[in-house]
Amino acid sequence: MQLLSSDFYVTIADMNNLIGSFTDYLQDTLGINVKPQKWDGCRSLPIFMQSIYDCYTVHILSEECLLLVSHTEENVTPAAIQKHYDTVRKKWTGAVIIVRQSIRSNDRRRLIVQYKIPFVVPGNQLYLPDIGLDMREHFRRIREEGKLFSPSTQVLVLYVLLTGSYDPLVSTQVVSKLPYTPMTIKRAFDEIEQANIGTTHMRRKERELRFQTTGRELWDAALPFFRNPVRRRVEAMFPLGAIPSLEAGLTALSRYSMLSAPINLTLAISSEGWRAEKANLCINDMNYDDNMHHLEIWRYDPSLLSTGNTVDRLSLFLSLRDSTDERIEAALNEMMESMQW
Image (tube, rainbow, N blue to C red; front, side, top):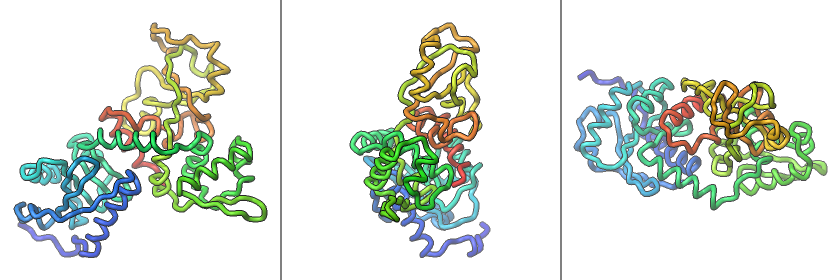
């Protein structure tokens, strides 16, 4: 067996940092506090696997899981990870999760689509299909018990994430960028502060908002407070372009990923646009043709966050995140990987 150069191995301090990053990431993204414990069974694994992984047990929601935490930053192919995973599953009946500092994007896709192996790259991505149903219930409970953002607050936070406008926000400047009244912006600032993702203070008689984090960290912190932007879905017949709408749903997801486009389009329209146009539409006509579309009525105007003919990626993720279809989950992961935070 060829020995790996010491350059490929992370230090003990780096190893501890990776475990710390893992626990912090689950706390930030899922609101779950875990306490990893060393697993004695690691000594029974083949020597070459002991040279690659440290093993820890954790409880995630109701599931006892085994973490295989990688010592090395050398690239390991998905096929090799599959063999390691199968070896451990012979000794552990619960969920097994691969934890690495990094995984190449193409390899992540193979782990998800081809092998369906749970993994976590702290600060970047997690894929935990074995406890997916529990996680969906956990998120649902958070959304039911917690106070969700109002649509205007959600638009403000998503606007900041999509544009990178992290400089301190002054209420009058926000009014000039988004079609909301000063009172609506005041309530949005209040909700953001109550969610502990930002703080406000007065500057020259104007209220200023500073977010506590930026980019992916802000997205993860705000995620439990976001609501599904879709208020209602209907089937409607109308010529394309007849009403102000944007590509949404699986149509939009096919633009942002390798998912095949559906035959009939899914389009998004604001609640105001729906009220103005619904009298002119043929609703629930089951005689499908090229003019039959899946129409989503959104809680906010999707065009506020879009720069083209398709809804923005973050709102699209929120509209589909509760899907249990593995194809859609994989496509959402692919889409979010391509985000430039």
